Image (tube, rainbow, N blue to C red; front, side):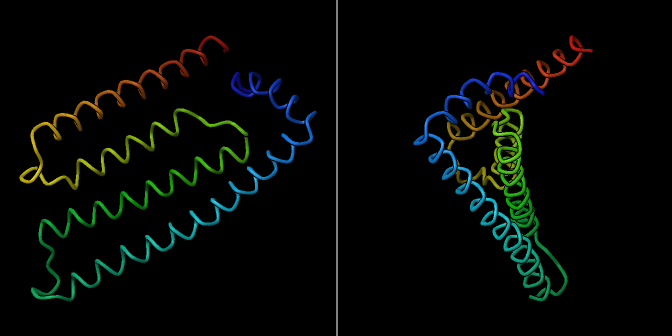
Length: 159
């Protein structure tokens, strides 16, 4: 059992003792399950959409040729599907462990930032926007590194 789960136990015991909170917790868990089903549909729809867009662009003239903007748009669509998969993973981890893992959430955020950087049109964006995107990327990267480093340090201490 992880440290996060141990910390959550007293709060969960209080929830189980109060009928209102117990029923609200059931509603939340049901809602999260519905979100998991919806996210699965979004992922399947996203994969079909990526395939359809690639097919349409390949059959247009010039035949079987993609432009740089087509390739970048395709990368953006691929990463959007990967982000949806990561969000689904967040949902399933929450359902299994009743804990939101910061590492997974931060990895998903980094992937979303990477998608934004890949599809960003630098000709149309202001320097401030590009700088702000770089600052957010740096901050999230440092935060992710610290979370992973802390997790590894805990593993070394426990072994």
